[in-house]
Every structure is written in C-alpha cells, then in structure tokens.
Length: 237
Image 1: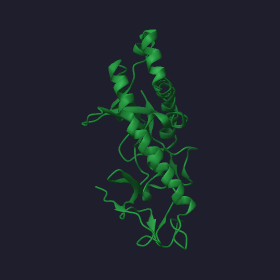
Image 2 (image 1 turned 90 degrees about the vertical axis):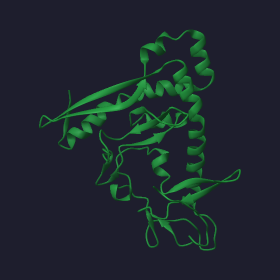
Image 3 (image 1 turned 45 degrees about the horizontal axis):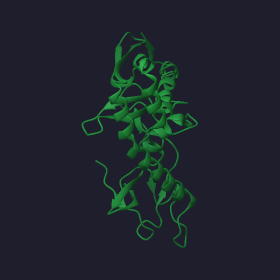
Image 4 (image 1 turned 180 degrees about the horizontal axis):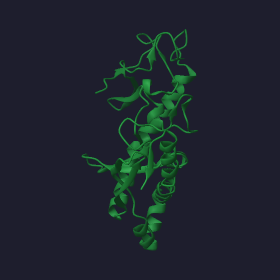
C-alpha cells in the first residue's frame, strides 16, 4: 500500500521525477482509472470498460492496456506507444491529499520515479514551483474533479440498466485459452430502446456523450489484440 507525505519545498527541494515511461517505473499495469471528462481522449487509443466495486459508487471506469495482470501492451523500447496517457497514470507519483477543506499535493516517497540526480525538477532554486510541478498540479485537480463526478454518471447507467457484463475469449498461438472477464460495458440495445425523455435527461446531465465515447472505444480491442499478436502471443477465438 502506497504511503504519502505532503510535498514541500524544504524537505523535497532537490527531489526530481523521472518522466520516461517504463515498467521499471510502475507503468506495467493492465488498466487505470478514468472518468467521463477524459473519455474523449481515452477512447482514441484504449477500450473503456467498467468494473464492479465494493463501495457506494458500485462501479469504476477503466482504460484497458492489456489482457492480464501486469500487462501493458502500450509499453515498448521507446516508451509509451500512444499519443495520450490517462491522467491517473501521468500523475504518479503524486496524489491529492485533503487537509480540512483544502487540497494539497502529496507524494509517494517510495515510488521508483523519484530521484535526487535525474528527471524533472519540482522546485526552482529559490523555492518556486517548476513548470513540471505546475502541470502535475493541473493534472491532479482535473483527475480529482473527474473522479468526484463519477458517482452521478454511474448512478445514471445503473438507473437505466445500461451496464452488462462481457467476456472476451483469447486463444494463444500454442493453443492455450485465456478469457478476459470481470468487466462490464454499455448495453447498446437497451440504450437504443430508451425513450426520448430518458435520452434527453442523459444528454442534459452530460452523460450521453460519455456513453457514446465508451461504445466507440470498444473498437480499440482490435488494436489491443494486434499488439498481443505482434508480441508473438495471441489470437481471439
């Protein structure tokens, strides 16, 4: 479990963050959290799926990078092979911390991206924040606001019964079978069957565009499968 400490320009004045993308720096993950305001950018590269949670929200939205734990098919010798990296990946090793009603930047002191000798500086020589840290502040605020808005979006999907579970069967070249399961997507037929008033309500709430972004993202499964095949592994049955 990651621990966090409040970032400050005294204790962390010489701290740097290695910005290159690699499994060695924590990028070897199968998926990452995303949110409706980010769906337009995410759907250009990654399938967007939902996973049930044990909290009150019920579901979370994920950008999918691979087919099994620890697999990120967008990582290669040249780094991350996509024009957009989801904000929840980009923000690491930073996170939002709350002190009363105020939000502050925290950092995971054990994260492999941290260095004293290489990477992006966080603070300027006389204590001001660097352009890189300003960017991370913007990323964290956008991510925090997006995730805060997620419950209303999920509630709308559940209310209209628009989530359905799915499974994707993959047959490896050696004949081994693999099944991607445990995820949900939009039930397209139920969406098409919604009455006009329901669609108008979803549109007015800003949910309808996000729903269609999820549906559009599913075409990226073809690219994800091709990436596995180029690595000498699988074939979808």
